[in-house]
Length: 252
Image 1 (cartoon, one colour):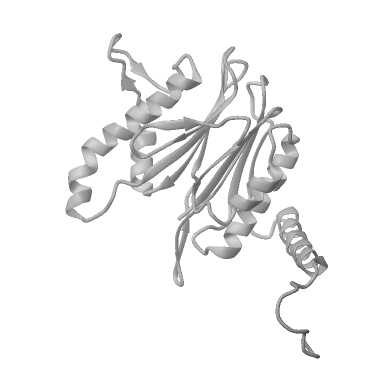
Image 2: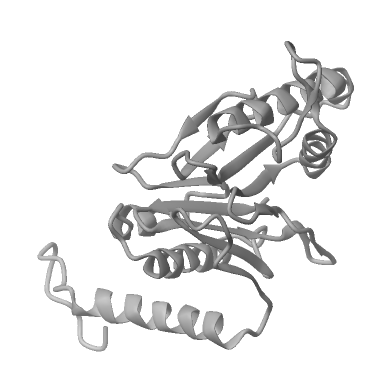
């Protein structure tokens, strides 16, 4: 399992992803799931994956080698497509091609085709955008009314994003909220864990402002986690007792 979240606000894009691929009592491993592409002044792209690791690696391999354009016959890659929309279409094509190659073997092993991607960035004079690309190769685009997308184990971190993220949220506030969302997910699911990779790109900058990995024991993330836990405890204690039932017993 994994958890990845992307937030697209007025100032720019935040995308974070954990790195856990296995989580058992004696089997914990990590793998980088956040891929970045930058051509200074021309394009900045970031891709996060969830699902079957071998399938996501196959998709990324195809995107690196390039997929043949039906009209020109030339290989297209994320470094060459002219728009972000065309880049999302290219990722969808790569997913469907991997599905064609692997579907029979997966069915024989009684496994389902499970891979999804968050994909965002900006190309040339186009807008900054954020997409969720499904395992069927289709996708949706993030909008101002709901300025975030998630993949993987998303249910634990979603309420925080719903309550706190708006399109006009400050870029680094969006990062902080995303990290709280990640911390809440880690608290509730052992399949999500450190290290955490994060990328920040400001709109029209065509470069990454921050590329960072949060390792176990990093002071800021530890402090964020402790402060959030304390804030939740203080919040529920400050809410009046429900007016249902009898009076509370002494000692309770």
